[in-house]
Length: 340
Image (tube, rainbow, N blue to C red; front, side, top):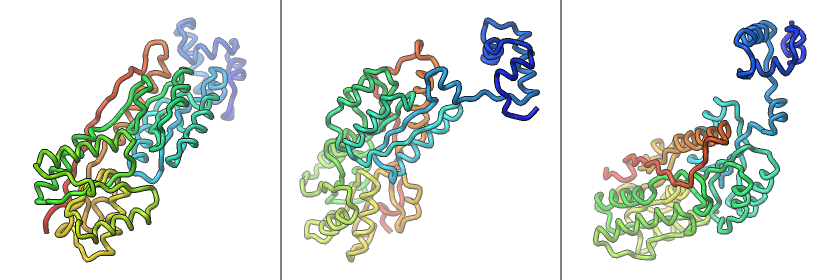
């Protein structure tokens, strides 16, 4: 018989009720082992496959996990998505990816869309603009399982995954101090994000603990326009008060620093040393290769997915606890911070 046989046709072939066949295929305790074996054997013989979409409709589930991220271009978010997808597919779930483009209004619209049942669960990293979390609270209050990663909303009582941003920034700054850098700058994008605050705090404390006077002009606040960032960095590098070491809080600012450096007479690492938070696969291919603080993105994605799958498959036996789980980052020393 051709593939594509329906449950009703399988039941007719077995001379059983469709409901009995369905329960047998789902390993129901109501059906005897002999009947289960008979049904499974015939299903294999006739090449029967359950229709996941029909099942989803019957169960009022979409078998979908939504991922909301602030940008696609960042290597970290791409790797988190890969980690989620691997686990989700193993359990028959597929992904819906939403990009907020760092826009809180767009984030709000996406969340309202998901309230209509497009996804069974959500893994999310908030925008740099997200100060009002009423739309996120609405999601949680509806009972939709939600987990935050990296950029979290502390007020929503659920599980959040972060990395050790404070310790990593402290260690990165300390590394530059150990490389004899005397004037170290910190480049950041957004002062309001929890990760930005923690990285800034780690930088500030490492400078203070080394007995170096903290110079406010050595913190450069950048935006999302690449050319504008390059010009800002170039201006600082050409100034009389230029740094000899830089910590960048995101990889896009590291790349902008490479571009700005090309417009000066400075050389890395002799005149300037650079270390950045980055998950970019090309960090080792840059000239000079970039010293990085790499976040365990794929592992974060896997852990998010595992918890959401647990909640979805055992909703009455598993809750997403209000907790923050920290998975440490790793520093890889390369040419950008090592003297030639």
